Image (cartoon, rainbow, N blue to C red; front, side):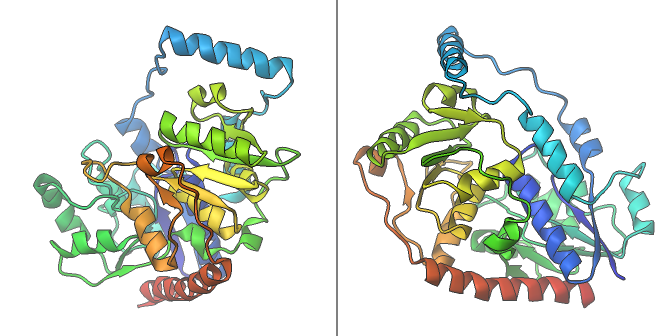
Amino acid sequence: MIRTATITWITFRNYGTFLQAYALQHVLRGMGYDNRIIDDKPIIDKKFPPAPPRKLSLYWKIRIRLAKLYHNIIGDIHRKPTSEDLYQKFRNQYLLMDSDFIKPEDLNERYDVFIAGSDQIWYPNEEVFDPYFYLDFAKKKKISYAPSVGASEYPKAFIQRSKPLLERFDHISVREQVGKNLLSSFIDKDIEVVLDPTLLLRAEEWDNVAAGPVFRGKYAFLYMLTYNENYINFAMHDAAKRGLRLITVSNEPRLIAFTDKVVEAGPSEFISLIKYADFVYTDSFHGTVFSLLYHKKFVTFRRFQPDSATNQNSRLENLFNILDIHGTFLGEEECEAGVIPLAYDKNSVDEKLGKYRKLSVEYLNNSILN
């Protein structure tokens, strides 16, 4: 059996990070390959020492305290298990990890193929750059599956560091067309565009790892990576018009002041919150992905301004383009104008995803074998 190792982020507690890692491993093992996700904690701990607690203004401290008091009185906030507990439970139950090495070079003795997995491991930022995620240590076959570049340009200094590492790959794929265009501008290799691993699994396959219903009754789910009161207010008023309670997760403490219920959630609960929602509001790529997989009514907010140096909207724009979805990706101006998100053709989305799944899995298999 061919032994494969996935190199990706897995220490950061992020729903998409854990779920893309699970999905790629699930697909590889389903294809008959042994696979382990390599624990990146030694790399992350060295690069990112524990951050100090976030400082909030007195205004927000008082507002959050009052909101928590309200939720406690009505018995509407979950204290145990914590989000951290639920992430650890998911990791223990669903991920096959390899943490048994002193240095990455040791891994060459036990794996035949190294895969630079998905997520934004190739984002052009000096703070997150590490040769490890470009498989600098690997002496065996090196391929990538759907890493997200997440930017429209690479600084010259970043090109100088990444180019020699990328040129050593046997096969390269990325998650967005913009990423392909960018890498093709400075490396002479064939580059494929493939689906994010989470899209390789159908909803019924995700049901196997989803938690049961987290909330009883009709609700809308709000999942925001960036705090934006214009979008939050849109979600509040739109959910009220739909007669839905607004539910969120505890990743952003300020949201407790705007929503009806805050829940602790790991990756399994995150899937469940979308699966059973009547509407989803999000600025997240993976929040959008699972809304599509579960045929949810949703709106995705433009998290970044088009002229921003850190603009990562291309990930979602690429997804909406290949699936021919329009009118669900809204910016602040549209929200302020009260634009109503458009419906999409669920059957058409499933048909297109089926086509791209086949091509993506074929790329992955061929890259391992050839």
